[in-house]
Amino acid sequence: MTYSFPPTFQWGTATAAYQIEGAIQADGRAPSVWDTFSTQAGTVLNGDTGAIACDHYHRYRDDIQLLADLGIQHYRFSVAWPRILPQGSGAVNSAGLAFYDKLVDGLLAQGITPHVTLFHWDSPQALEDRYGSWRSREMAKDFADYATVVVKALGDRVTHWMTLNEIFCFTHLGYGVNQIPPHAPGTVVSSLKDVWQTSHHALLAHGLGCQAIRAASPQTCTVSLVDNFLATIPTVETPENIAAAQTAFHTVGTNGGIIFPALTGEYSPALLEQLGDQAPDIAPGDLDTIRQPLDALGFNVYSGVYVRAAETPLGYEILPFPKGYPRLHMPWLHVVPESLYWGVRHVSTTLNQPQMPVFISENGCAAQDELTQQSEVLDLDRIHYLRQYLHAAHRAVVEGYPLQGYFLWSLMDNFEWAYGYDRRFGITYIDYPTQQRIPKASFYWYKQCIAANQIL
Ligand code: NOJ
Image (cartoon, rainbow, N blue to C red; front, side, top):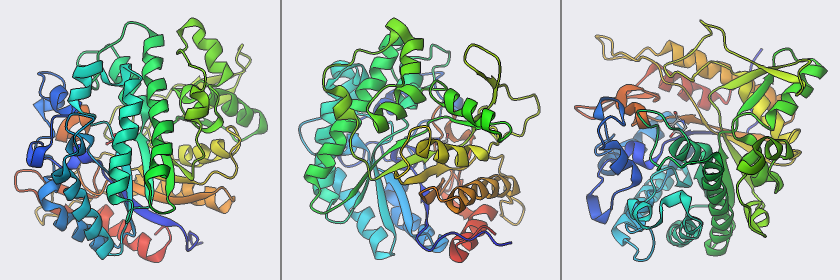
């Protein structure tokens, strides 16, 4: 049996600015909240920061060549807001824009389509100092103005835009998780309501951002949101367990307050009931702003949760992962390939958006990669993981769900946020002291899959 994809299926790979660029002081860039956060003692493993990262800012030509060697046609990267508007709003830094100009031209010259994320967590520190970033509604307006600047500059060549990446992570993990060390930048706020208010502001940014992109784009373009909603998987695929997974989908993680309003224009009623007086304040008109027509939804998927029907008040239970459940090199990275399939299916069914094209905007894993004496990285564990998730993608396609592409996270090892350089998600090994790029076994495997348009 072969596992082929339709000829239109988009094979891609993804990165994000702060995780690869380095060059944090180059050409007028001002600090982002991650620069500030990572330089505070005890925040990031081993005291790592994004100051140099993969030095992509200076080595972008080599990295475009790497993409060309991979035979990829689609590349997702993000633009760093503090390069473009160092003060968050106001004066535009044309030297910052020039970098992305060159990057886009270089990609197009190799026949690679750029897919641009406007915000992947590195917001300007200036806005944190001015009004507390996502604690303020101002942030949504400033994001839309920033989007306008970028789209005006690149929109003659870029036609695929993503607004925000993983709202849950940069709001709830930054403002809501009172742990030591903290997980992400953001002043821990005093109530759950205030945490939800930050994600509500991010949703507004998404909505205003969509409008800004469409207004500024000189040509027809696609606009999407990238979300890491949590997929609920029926432990056994019987009608009652499937129904249980659908019910649970509303309230697990932050689904009910992020993907629900973004796609349906309403917070999930089940979530609102659970939150009670901790629900965010929603001003008149907000939900209309938030629910914008989207051309596609980007789904970042790494793991999921198993659900079964049960005689509980909610009618289901979430099953804990047993000790010894297969996991890759992050505490949360349980291997749950079905989450890809079920995530796509929930968009169609539970969110009632059967026409909404979905693409996997990220999927991948951290593994304990080592260089052999022959300078190879034999990351068979990563190939094993990826192959299973691609099978789940194949199932979604075969069953007729509108899954249009797959972006592997990540093109290369990079700054994995609070885990610094300790966790490697790349299909290319970065030897940080020399900045040498060494394609791993998974790189060559993925290259063959792309070329054959099938899982090999
Ligand atoms: C999702 C995030 O978008 C990305 O920045 C991160 O590196 C991966 N997950 C892996 O944790």
